[in-house]
Length: 66
Image 1: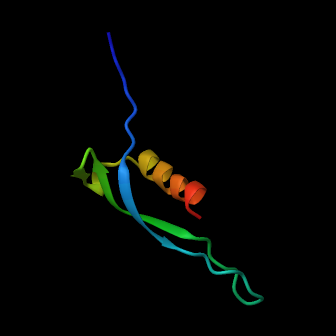
Image 2: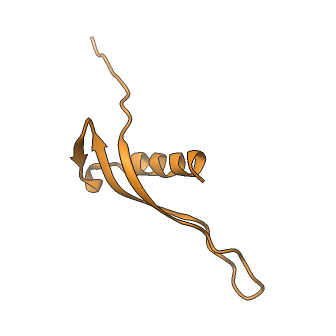
């Protein structure tokens, strides 16, 4: 028998707003950088997070904060 649970990470992030496009510059989209990840109060190294998990955290920031 296998039991699986889904646990959300607590994380801190840095948000850099995008630069709007001008006639001479194509502009940049907003950037999100995940700084610290915690699971039950324990710091998880960023290197231990999969690319999919990292992207889910970035999407969460875009959807819920900005």
